[in-house]
Structure formats: C-alpha cells, structure tokens
Length: 305
Ligand SMILES: [Fe+2]
Ligand SMILES: [Fe+2]
Image (cartoon, rainbow, N blue to C red; front, side, top):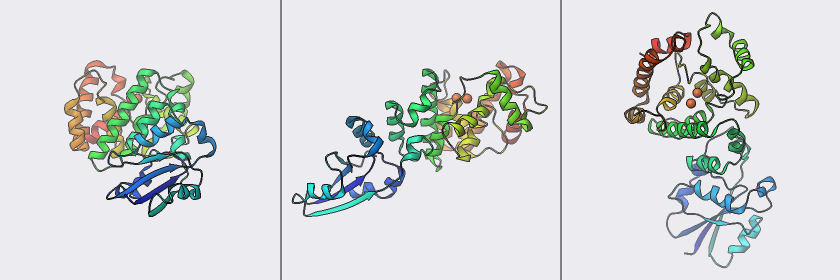
C-alpha cells in the first residue's frame, strides 16, 4: 500500500454532504484512507476522545473503512506525519459549519450518527431528552428510525422523516391549562367553533412553539408533519402521512402492526390509507366522539378514505 488519502476535518461527524463527496469511493483499491480530526478544536475538545471516535466510526457507512488519527493539529503536521511512509499523499479538507447538526436544526447525517448521538446523549439529544420521559423517548426514537426507513424505501428524504419522528412528541408530557389557552389563541381558525377537539391532541400544535423557541427549527415539511400527527388533516404531505402512520405502528406499540409496516415500506400512500382506516375503526369503538368529530380528523377521513 503506497498511496494515502488524508481527510482532514474539524469535527468527527460524517454528514450526508461528506458521503456525497464520494468518501466511499476513496476506500477502493490500494489506497489507505485516514480521517483526521484536528486537535485544538475549540468547544469540541470537551468531548472525550473515545466518544469522538465512537461518533466518527458509528457514523460511517459499513463499506467505508477509515482510520482515526488524533495526533495532529494542522494539515502541515498531518502531511509531515505520513511523509516518507507513503509515496503519494492526497489531502481532502472538509470545512463545514457543524452547528446546525449539533443544535438539532439539521438531521442530514446517516442514521448511525443520529443513533450514536442519541445513545450518547450528545448535542441536540442532551437538550431534547429533557422533554421526554424514558418511555416516550424510546417511542420517539423508534418512530424516527421507522420513518427514516419508510422514507428510504419510498425514495423520499429519510432525514426529514427521522427529524419529524424524533421531535413529534416534544410537548406530549407538558399539557397544562396555559398551553391549551395559548394553542387555542394561536390557532383560532382551527379552534373556532370546534370545541370538541380532544385535549390529548393539543401537543401537535404546542410542539411548534417549542421547536421554534428552543431548537430554532424552520423546516416547514417537518413542522407541518408534526402539526397534524395525531388528528391527520386534508392534503397531507408524504412526510405527514408517514409520521402519522409510523407513530401508530412503530414496533413498540402493543398490537401486531407488522403488516402495516410492510405496506408502508412498499408504498406509503396505500399503507397510510390502511393505517388511517384501522385507526378510524379503533377510535369509533374505543374513544369519545371528540377524537373523531373535529374538523381536522373529519377532513382527513374525507380526503383519504
Ligand atoms: Fe403525539
Ligand atoms: Fe407519538
């Protein structure tokens, strides 16, 4: 092995942009690839080395086989370190503002990175975790993972599905009178003459305020999906349909949803209709009338069933 590519980055996170740069292609043939995270990198040095390694390695697609080097602090040092050992040294520098990923405003990284950050409770996960009980947190992680896979199978952006799934219940545990009043005030068009709206569905609206104020999330596709995830609505986007369904059929739910998951993976449109129909039947049998007799749910049934 006499050729080496040094990928020099300021942070050990692989994003989808890095993947698009063709990192996986580099590893073919007789070329060795070393991923270097420069030392002395401001706030990120707070992360222990082993965790940094973990984020890096788990974030990679399995076919990328990279080595980690924490010893150098500049491109010149990196060159000097490998000089003499390889006859050809190629340098690829990745310069990126990682703050949207760290703050949870952008989820465009492989799902392995998402799961690692969530498991290690790092960055956006440390912030979001506080909003959830243990059980609810496991639920949103399962919804995020399932939505990711459904999107992937349907040629949609899996990272948007993952993001909507992860944040969808962010205010589920925080129901209060104040929250109810604020929601009714802000969404007057929906609540006007619509007093039968079920109380447990308010969190789909209140989530938007928290996601704006605490996480600075502006992605309309994600926010619109969350805004109707309990009631449904007319004219739902593919991501809204997927979140609605994934929330009801994620594998931790206490009913056999495997068939619905399969349908969603094959074709989310017909899968969504099947989930909606099953949910309608369930609500008619088990719930108070408010769960159905509200404008959004009726609009949804009329539009899709
Ligand atoms: Fe919910
Ligand atoms: Fe949920």
